[in-house]
Image (tube, rainbow over all chains, first blue to last red; front, top):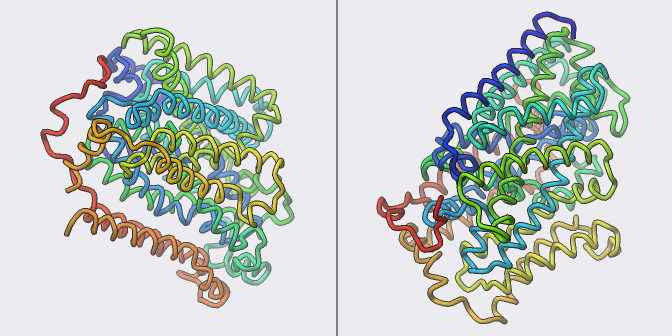
Length: 492
Length: 85
């Protein structure tokens, strides 16, 4: 850490982020749409990096590497395999139709889009409550994970409470003045940075361990189980299948991802994103997998949570201190790009969908409210991250599943004219309740038939939407026309 | 080809990709297939191939069922449009 080049790199990185915040604030208009949606003018690279950087968290480089350390090469397909195709596909399936409605009717969030489709304030409120309920714990966990990683990489030099303050503080420097534009510009910078540094890091570790082929030969000889998925209990087919319903299909439901899709300039930008996305996901998780598996022979004997430290340990034991600082910059970039987008999206949801229920908020006031709420949420998240209450961590444990089981209603609303508001309400509430009953241990484990709770909850959401919609009066022709009349003009 | 048929083909693509991800019958090859480039076992290199296939599948989806909106679609705004959006 005393390395002059390293400190220079770290300071340069921070200066670039501050410059982006200052410049972003100067070019931004003081309107709601400009602050929260960057004027719906994001190009292909901006949308791609914004989605990708918001999607990648500390788990990618820390947790996933730790998981790969324990289960081997199969971790790659288990965690990210289905996402490689289905996450960009959901940008088409849900994203494009939502973008069309947003552009046409001025919708900026899920409560507005789906409340608008069903012409229902209750649906809008349910989306708002569920999204905040799952996003806030997820935000706190991102801060906890990032701060622990930061403290680990600095070998305890920066204590946990300072790490959390630094991560949140730096995120606010550019998000507060420049809104979505600030976070997107830093995403372009940080996303490029962590992809490039991660690739170089992999190459440097490989060289230090004797070369790609030599390390693999070592693994084949000393721990051949790392090659075979069928030898790992964690990767049992029923878990593998169930996990397809956890993170991969949840991504498009995250409010920070959904809003960025609505902020795209045109249809062509979203098409480009869906073509770049599989490659970027495969690269970053591919690097993380290899580092984790290689770590199992280079630094053997780590158990449980200790395995999550494998990347910092590899850097510390086999590379120079400058690499340690580069690793620190990567951790900062990855963690902050998800924290800033989560903070902005919760501030956006409250400003645009909660406050207007009580008072009319003009465009300029919305920006002011957004900034105040950003500070409030940042402060609240910081204190919760310090206390780490068990209840919050327990909700965060199934937040991804919570997002996933909202997807059937979103798809039904966009593709099925017969879907009713009653059907949507029931399909949002019932699976959320069941998910809680299963994850909090109220219902016995056997009732999920061996699957992870997310799968039966997802099926329940589909069935509930269909059955209740057929049992209730069909939406009025005017209501259908507003959504499906628009789609008929596009999808011919 | 009508849009419904094209959407049907898209669903077929999704099902094939899902099946290829949950291809448990191929797991026997994990320990038997030679390492790709000398360092990538089958469980890993399979997903390199899957990534290429995913890009091609998305390219197909775009060609089949992702039309651009007509130029005049956004000209008139609906009554629900936020006054300041």
